[in-house]
Length: 111
Image (cartoon, rainbow, N blue to C red; front, side, top):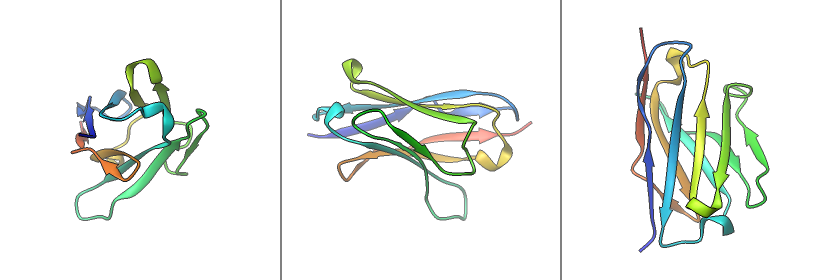
């Protein structure tokens, strides 16, 4: 059974950092591109960034230069490093691959 599990969310002050993880089971993660998305309260889900099978990344303009996606194929895990966080980054963050989605992890940026 394929499963994606996000973790690492929490409450952080503006300007702070978090590292989110997306761990896969039941699939060979290295065979797939992985996307990170987020959904803020009252807003539609939006793409934050992607990492291809070969490790090439691309980001939404709103997070470019602040967020970084990486992958550790040996651990079957993809990471989303969030730096210089802003209140507007508050959202539930999701990863997806091969049409599968995790349950999300909540990030709250507030002083």
